[in-house]
Amino acid sequence: MATAFDILLLVVQAVVYFGVMAALFGARRVLGIGVFVSALGVMHFLETYLASVFYVEVIAGTISPGSTVLFSGKLAMLLLLYVKEDAETVRQPIYGLLLGNFLIVALTLVLRLHETVPVMGRQPDVSFIDEMGWLMVWGTSLLFVDAIAMILIYEKLGRVFGERILPRALGALALTLTFDQIGFYAVLAWLTGAPSSVLVGGWVAKMLAAVTYSAMLAVYLNYMERQPFGQGRRLGDVFGRLTYRHRYEALLEQAGLDELTGLKDRARFEETGQNAFEHAAAVGQPLSLVMVDLDHLKAINEVADYATGDAILREVAKVIGGSLRATDQAFRYGGEEFAVLAQGMDHEHAIALAERIRMAIAQATRVPGQPHATASVGVATYPGNANDFGGLVRCADARLYAAKQAGRNRTVADRMVEIAMRDGGRLAVDEA
Image 1 (cartoon, rainbow, N blue to C red):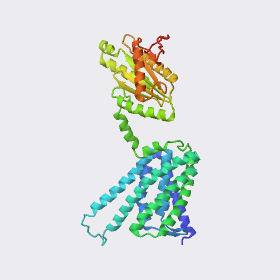
Image 2 (cartoon, rainbow, N blue to C red; image 1 turned 180 degrees about the vertical axis):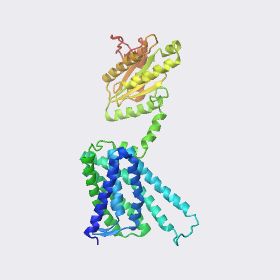
Image 3 (cartoon, rainbow, N blue to C red; image 1 turned 30 degrees about the horizontal axis):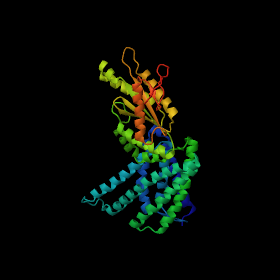
Image 4 (cartoon, rainbow, N blue to C red; image 1 turned 90 degrees about the vertical axis):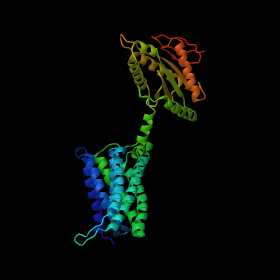
């Protein structure tokens, strides 16, 4: 049975581990984050070795310092890295450890093909290397899942505890270490025949480790590097960055961009618009569509050149983008025509947006001595103007055509009579 001295040794190991790693982390602005991450990775082999062969007896059962002190401490360090940096930074050691340990097993399989010779009467213990290799792969695979789950749990608990780091870290570490203890013990028992006292004792020890490391994290974050602890991060965004899903989504995003203007193209407009309309109908929210068409761009191309026309299109795209809210989306509908989807915007505000865009285009493209573009605009809003997305597009397009017919450089936003703000005046437009 463990003495008070044995327990004290475990506490000292945890304090030393946290103290040194936190010091390296705190010096990241001077030494670079790579020093901290490398130190974290170097300890992984020792963790696995101790977890497979080095155990001590305590009141609750049999435990290994490798799991209790080093592995629990590693999770605490990954949580610290996430809190103070971001998901894209913390995923680097997570993936590095996983791939590095797969490499160890692969190289071990190749090493077995060698004909070895004894040196000083000793032969390599290949069976031990095999056992350690598979334990490292399994342990690192668990770490991969553990780290992602821990961070998501930490963020979820932020909705309950706000910026109180102690309960958030304790809950995240305790739940993650419970899952890890069960998963690691299952393979350890299969490979080494570890008794059930290892499962029970290890779990109790890891819960105490969770309390210890959470307390040290709270002290460090409250007194050494005080700042808000990431409350309010969306779980989907965090998960996307931990798993590189955002990179995949970025590739999809680029696939739907218009090369000239950088706006989303017509195919994306059709897809996004349909989804936006279905969402608006489901939640009873308005959806406005603003269709913008440049006036006389073909004539400008003939008088000047196509490079001038392209420059105007790029400038118009920039102007439209600068006129929108964060939730609005702009598209190049085709040729010199653009579309804006405004989720949650009623008709009155959509008219104001359309006028803002129209006047901004006229101002931005006006260059003394050179042809400049104006815009005709049509506005339609659900509910009221259409029962489906196709109808909304047809309505906005018809009003755009009415603006063209009425003399261009104006906005039409009503079935019978609506605006045209040109040079400070109003012009009645009969769409029929």
